[in-house]
Length: 341
Image (cartoon, rainbow, N blue to C red; front, side):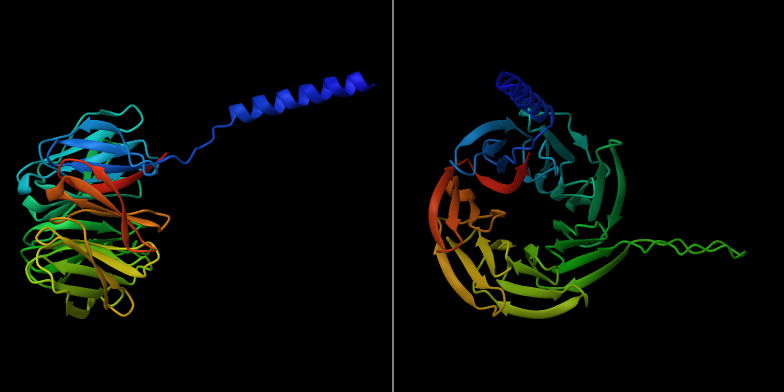
């Protein structure tokens, strides 16, 4: 009897092992993606060791990057000051470039997001926003803003609202999707076609870097011309506050994941400026080098990654102590994103 039990127990363990092996399990591996403007590569970085695991060639002027939700594909905007017209597509699993996407007639892709299965991008050279559908391999939607230098982009998670900064226009555009038409069986002429609408909100000339608070209530943007921070109430679609951050060349702005702090970088000054999001008071000026551009927050809320373009360095900041805890050497870093597989 004892030998029979042992035999059955062994068979059960083997069966469970085979069953477990047959079920795909995500290891939750996360990588930091960072673009090098100097070397024209997309670097895949281990966020734990801060080592670069791979360098994948991209186009001549890469600016921003986003990954698909499954972490298998990255999309890179090739900007050229508004004169170029490509999105580079990168296979992150096999670490190689795929076929580029020609965005014409939309020129100068810059800001980029992946929302609701689509790739959304600003098209600065065309004063517009475009959308690419990976499934059909087509540009399936676009909308003009009519504003000068439609540069950075944020798409709400449901894809129903888009925010852009228009740098030379000194404005923020809010593009709102139409409500689904109410069904009706009444006879008569066709109902008017619903279209996306735009609300243009004055900010300050040079407003470029911006972010939306984690609760979706506020949009903060920083002016590279005069250091003015403009806060927009997104439910009211109007400016709610403006104050002077006392900086020049403000380039990017980012909330911490918990919404408590706002980081601002400048390409003209060597400090990152950190504000309390509630009181709107400055907390600290952190010396990081000779200037910085891209900002990426660790999703767990413990670290910030700041792309110090002039110093060929990505600085790692501890969000608890607001001190520098690491460096990643990369030529002319700028746009960054997370890829989770």
